[in-house]
Amino acid sequence: GMRSMSRDESFVEYALKMLLQVLVNFSLGLIVAFFVFVFGLWGIVKSYQPDPLTALMFFLSALCAGFAFVTTYLLLMYGAAAGGLYGMAKLAETNLRLQQGQGQQYRPVQGGGYGRQ
Image (cartoon, rainbow, N blue to C red):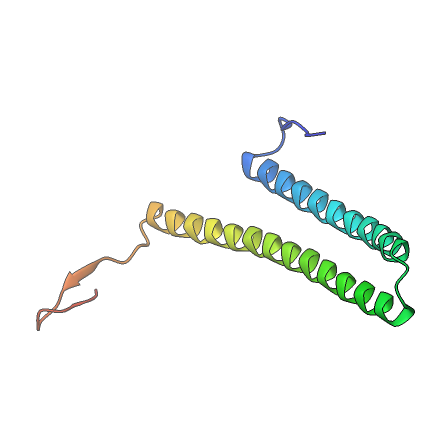
């Protein structure tokens, strides 16, 4: 089940652990569902009693399609998680820099443009 936040961990640690748990759960669920699909697919193909070449071609095509779906879904899910974490890290870095007063201010320079001072 879902775990609760302990007193010794920050919200960021808790959120990262929960994100990792969700990613692992989705990954394992999709992989198990793929294998169940493959074994069920062979039963469906055999029930139609096609000639061996047609059966093999259809089975391999459906197997590749299922594998492509699972792979694409997992890559998009992990990519979205990584992109979100990267964006949050950059936002935190910018906020920290502004809070510490290290943000460089832009002032007008001679010639009407803007430059770092």
